Length: 270
Image (cartoon, rainbow, N blue to C red; front, side, top):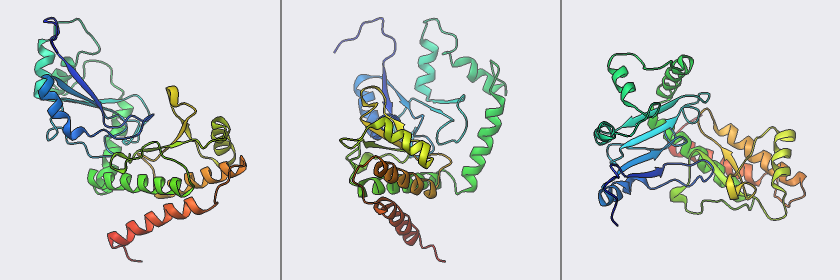
């Protein structure tokens, strides 16, 4: 199709992972779409970066941003942005007025070891510690592997309870969060309340039209296999308390088996 001559930049927006809708986007094919539309590729990886592979240069991505409150284990308040040479060139050409969304002062400040505006200094210190923790645990590849394990454990546990996952294709399943369809006849608000108040697990609702159709189990950042087992157990018991027929212990056992198989494949010995 034709674009107006006034349009100076076309963006293709992708989500490596959108938390309310956890299936993962196949970003590695985004460069083909970018070439076709002569567009920049912008990726929202708020819940993906640090938890799943993201090869910015190899995949031809132009702008990637994330929030430090997810896999990087910090409180909210810090955004991290990376831009390609093409993106910086486009930023220099755009003549629309902007202030906070103008990244050029930040780039100049980076070269001068400074910042253009007051920084969230405590979060920057926290980010340094988070990155040190990731490095001590084996680096980002080890973090990816840990998140893959947590996601596999959670999905196995949920399916063993006879519940249906929102993402049906395992290729696009998330290592950060698992979305589960609320079973028929179960009040979604009551399920979240019982899980929280009686069993200490926070099950997030969906958003928009999925608000009461699904619940979400987060397993990213500072999360361990023990947390997944506890979450699956809370789902089992909350459903049972609400009168939904559920095989107690089956979900936990399925999650445990995934963990044990992972340890055996890795060659860990007692």
